[in-house]
Length: 327
Image (cartoon, rainbow, N blue to C red):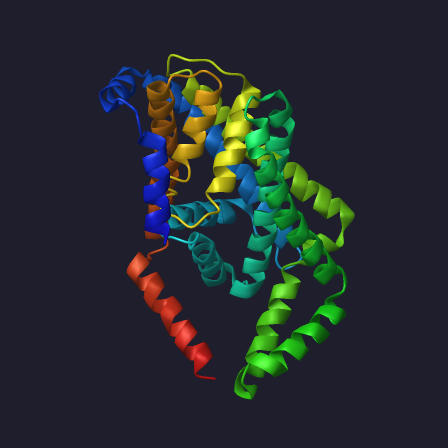
């Protein structure tokens, strides 16, 4: 499914373009601008690690020097596996290093993704009134707003009323899960609830949202730096719109690395603001590579430093799944 979606998006992105001009644009770019762009991006990754550190405090205080490599490994996993499997990978590495249960870590990851989605919607909502493509994305904003706000409200309720959540979970458990798995399932759910601890405080929710905005502002700064390597100029607000739309699009199933789902929306937005298609395509492809390559390489380095290989991780996770299903 992901390959088909990526192929469709790539077709939309590249149709009608003169590819020789796209290649010429890429060749003539001033790649020195990528250096400050990558620096801004890694500042955003550091803020993301701090946000995760803040969310994990109720479970265990973990220093940033430990979490930053784990976050980088998660990015690497998202970039080379489909279905954002890097989130499971970083939860696994954290359990291996710090003993935090995978289900509790995954609860914090779910909360992160909800706040990331809301931040992307905020970026789009701020930029759309000043955009010639506002009507085109209005229904998209409304749809994703219901999705992310609904998810956040649900998890806020679960975090605030854990006993009610347990009762409903037990009712569903009795109906759909064999009796021999009930004890393990309840244990996993309790760990998951502990990972939602940060949602029980209004102050914590505000801090998580503020840091989420900061994370994505740093990424937009990277878009702005990379733009200077190419012969066009748009406002920072347009790049916020592009950042919001392309990252909402990457929630769709796609080939690893968000091929197509990242590129096509970005190119279309830039074209709507008067950027020639070949220039918009060259910029978007280089930006995509600059977002993908440095963090993926760093993630592989940190995974190697953990004396792990992807094959070993797959084997160990497979063994844990087999152990769970045999209970």
